Amino acid sequence: MKKIVNIFLIFLIPFVSVSQNGDINLLRKINGSYTTSGGHFFQFITDTDDPVTFGFPGVLLIKGLATKNKTDLWNSTEMLSTSLFSSLLVFGFKSTIKRDRPFITYPEITKHTHGGSYSMPSGHTSICFATATAVSLIYPKWYVIAPMYTWASLVGYSRMYLGVHYPSDIVAGAIVGSGSAIGTHYLFKYIKKKVEQKKSHEKL
Image (cartoon, rainbow, N blue to C red; front, side, top):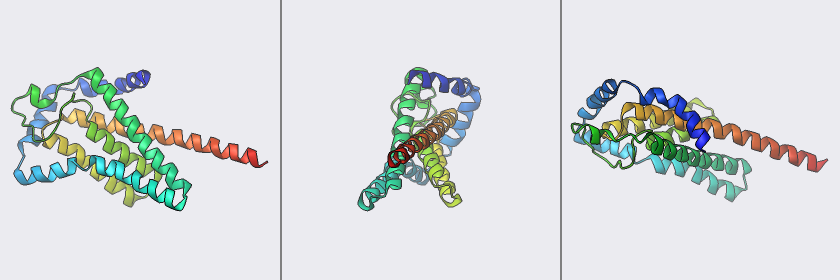
């Protein structure tokens, strides 16, 4: 896991070292546009991370068990594995980079929601992009891809609007989440291929 974190850090360094003025100025504009109605909407959006992330594979798991559909069971396991992998990477990056939240460094940034540990990368954004990418790879249809990435992007925006993440945290989270999903997807394709090959040999 440490090696994986170090490899990803190579790609994240440009976002960590991005002009702090540009990063905070964009956040000031987004966070400064806060309204009560907007706050309620984006709080709702930010709170959808776990229900969607775990609800989607949960429904597939129940359906797969009820109908003995192995494809649904595989897909459910892949989605859950993606979320776990993404979460482990986020924990590793946060512990390594140790970037303070924007409302701690800049008093003019108002915190409107929960946000406790280190800032980079955004955990909400990472797990949502991990889910969106995993679902899109498994069900590659435009009517699946479009709403999934729209949802993930709105969650990322909500974290800035509510004052708990820099824009670069969101970009980094999207990269970590999407990368986790792609890596997990091809790992599962390899495992399924090996399983099918084993079954074919057993039949001979």
